[in-house]
Image 1: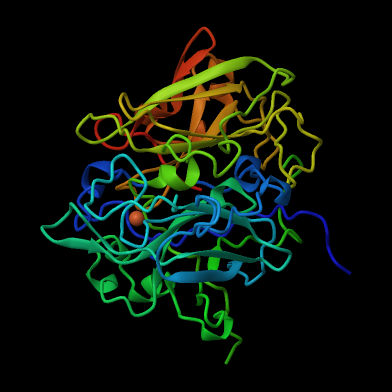
Image 2 (image 1 turned 180 degrees about the horizontal axis):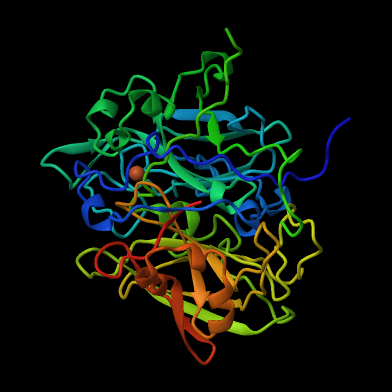
Length: 246
Length: 204
Ligand SMILES: [Fe+3]
């Protein structure tokens, strides 16, 4: 029998050694923007185990299609056509349905459509760079886009970001909220990147690198990359010492 | 031999970067026409129950400079202390209140602003009542993992004095970093990333 009651157990604590630390001087902007005191550890209350949900009805037809969602009629974004797909799971391995994903990225030349980006690569008039999707009943999502180009950024004298797509992810509780980045298999810039290297465990960095997925490639159209995302798991609600009120 | 604890690891966080606006508040970034509206821009409508309030402030770095490229999200209960969430099993929250808001800090002044309502009190797991509060999540370039904190209300002295979380904070001198100053219906809540007034951030 399927348990349809929403889960209300507390989330597993974050492994703060697995995530990047706040202060990572190789990524210079973190120096003035990192809290120096220890975080205050607390158990979850109802403010943490609840969170907003988003319905599939809010999505437009082309929200997950960055090739077309900013393009003029009949036009499409310039670049290597790719599909990115995967599942959102929690740490227990359970597929999470109804998860809102928002993505943003540079165009194929490595330029963002943003007033603060003055990289000399040109804007693509048919590429906006944002998209979103909501996972299906199995936790699956997909998007179509062009592969973002690497770009230089002012950090060290010659730092280049590897090709990457930014992901913002909503779980079921506000404390599952996560922003991360997806990298591409085989990119030699990943091990050189101060932002990727803000993560100290190489095993953790690997979790952000999407493999080429030839099985889901559409012949003569678009290559596929598979990117699974894992959010915090939560304690079973059964047998939990949970006095009334929470 | 035992079975292995085969839990997965959470995907590691990465900074939201300087262009988070493109993905999360695209209209603010000047990208129009992709979505009909900006998510989280409106938390209330004219039928929302409760006391209308404004929350405003800045996110300030270790040099005293307000961040002009940050994004904040807030999450709170409705006027009766109920959350608009499937995991809310105590009742049905006000359908005219989302409980969730998202705003960038202004590109010139670094000021953020939320129009919302004052939340009711919600229970702590031991059954006691928490003081009215709003959960904050702050991301920006240079922030490697989203910062979690809470805002309490400066005009709720009695409730604050009873709050189980505020009372748990050993460094009493830092409690004030979680309490927004009130003036009329406006609450000012500056978030200090570093320095003498560094805000208390939670691992929660
Ligand atoms: Fe980027």
